[in-house]
Length: 423
Image (cartoon, rainbow, N blue to C red; front, top):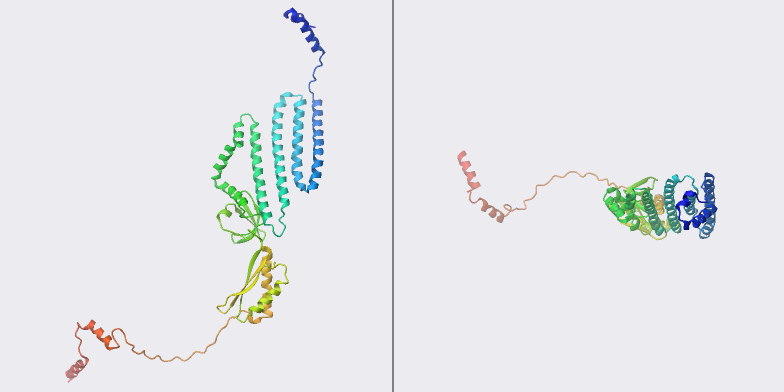
C-alpha cells in the first residue's frame, strides 16, 4: 500500500501500476544476507569438492602411469601443485559467494590471485620436470655405450634449469602486475623487448659470461655429464653442468669446480668425446738379453685371462734400443677409462713377474768395463810438416816478400866477425 505522500506525488494514471508494483515487491521474498555459518559451510564444501575432484582425476592418471611405466616421482611433481591450485580456486569461489564481511573481499581476492599464479607456475614447472624426467628415463647411462644418453642428459638437465628460471621470472612479473602502481615493472619483466635488453645488458658482465658458456657447452656437445676428462692435470668425470660452473668428480673422490668459461677458453682432454673405447700404453726399459718374441707370447697369454681387455688392440713393439736398454712399448685397449687403467696395471704386474722368473736375462743392468792403466809414453816432438812461410823453398820465398825491405845479416858472416873480434 502506498503512503499518502507518495500517492499525492504520483500522477493519477500511474497509481494502478504503482500499486501493482508495490504489491509485487511485497510478494517477492528477500535475498538472505550471507552469515559466518554459511561461509564456513561454503568453505567446507569447497574443500570436500577439491578432495573429490583430486581423487577422481588421480585414479585414471595412476592407471595410465602404470600402463606406460611412468616414474613415480613424476606424478608427485604434478599431484601436489594440482591439488593446491584446485583448492585455491574453490576457496576463492567460496569467498566470493559467502563472505559476510564484504570489506575484506578486495584484499582476499588479491591474495587469491597471487596464490593462483604461484600454484599455476608450480604446476607448469612440475609438468615440465616430469616430461623431461620421462625423456631421461628413456636414455639410461648405466650401459656400455652411453654417449648419446650422456649428451641427452646434459641437454635435458640444462633445459630444466633454464625453464625453471623462465617460469620464476614470468610468475614474478605476473604477481607484480596485480599490485596497483607496479604494472610498469611487471610489464617490463614480461615484455620480450625488456627481457632481451636486460639479458643483453647483463651479458656484458663477467658474472653472466659463464651463463652463456654453460648453454654453449650443453648444446655444442663439447662435454657431457659422465664424460671422462683431464683438466688441470687431473683425471675425472663430469659430474654436473650448471649455468655457471662445471663440477668434475676426480678419481680420488675430490670435486674440482671450474667456471663454464674454462671449457670454452682452455684446452682440455675429453676421453669419451665420441666413444668410451680407449688405448693405453705400458712401457718397459729392459736389457738387450730379453726376447721380444717370448714377451709377445706372454702378453697374449696374460690378456687371454682377463675380462678387462676388449680384444680390439694388442701390440708389443721395441720402440728404442739405445743407452744399454731396450725400450718395449705395449698397447692394449679397453671399453672405458676405468677398465683401461686396471688393465694397464695388470699387464705391467704380470710381465714384471714374467721377466723376473722366466726371462732374467731381460732384467735391466748397468755394465761397467774395468781397464788397466797403460804406462805413459814419452811424446816425440812433432815433425815439421811445413807451413805458409816455412818448411819449403816456396814457403820461405813467400816469407821473403814480407821481410825483403829489411836487410838481414848472413849468419856465417856474423859468426866470422865475432871470431875476428875475439882474436
